[in-house]
Length: 172
Image 1 (tube, rainbow, N blue to C red):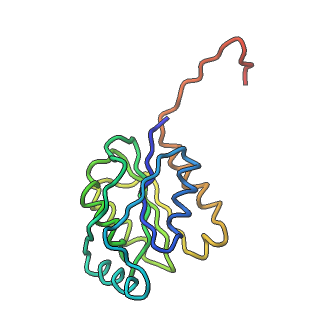
Image 2 (cartoon, rainbow, N blue to C red; image 1 turned 90 degrees about the vertical axis):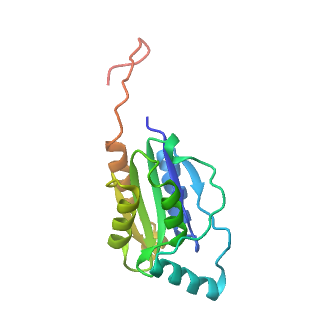
């Protein structure tokens, strides 16, 4: 079985909810992207939009996990102003070339996933093995089918484990 890391940033909690669900389904380790200077309230919201629009990369707190230690890194980001969230941009600048394989997911109010995934692909230098885009409304309505399909695509790319049959195992 592949060693998988789910790394994400979440400002409002939507991306966090999806990341926790995926980590549980995939048996993956989890790492949160945290910025040094929090962006709370209306001013923080405005700063998020400005940083995303201009492609800025804020300072991050220390990460717990090194993506080089994993076979697959699943990166989760909110879409800010139709762009990649600036904390995830910072993470990708620092760690994006360290991973072997990637999958991307994003959460958003309405649109911007295509642009965000293109940026992530460019920053990692790899086409993702799978992508998942969920609107906040879909997450609130429990987007099980989309999550199930995303996990199936990731699992389909894993090396198959050999099953060792012993006398205690009945034939399938």
